[in-house]
Length: 109
Image (cartoon, rainbow, N blue to C red; front, side, top):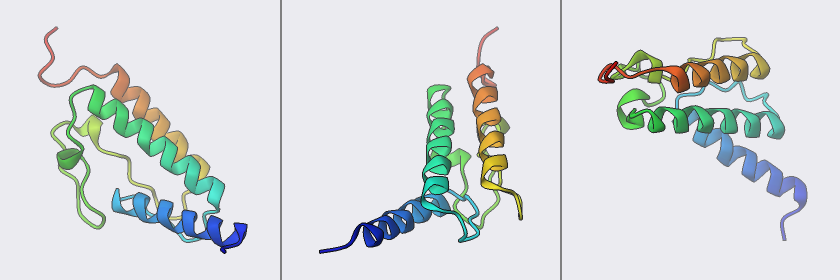
């Protein structure tokens, strides 16, 4: 039977893998709480993009590739080297707010 510590490490690795698959740069020093907060922020952003007509398969590039979204507002912000988790989450939340207020390029006035 796995210990709580082993379970936490396994879940953290899975969360990190999902974030990296979405193109989020990780340092490997993020703790479990930070990974959870990052994933929640990214999921809120993606939900806002989808609610406003974005296609995540088009708008988010795979890890290591440059994104060319249909609408620049729908691209997940890139985490800067040496950027703290807190600072990155704040930028993702700001981007989510922008998406929620944004009228798509095909929106009628």
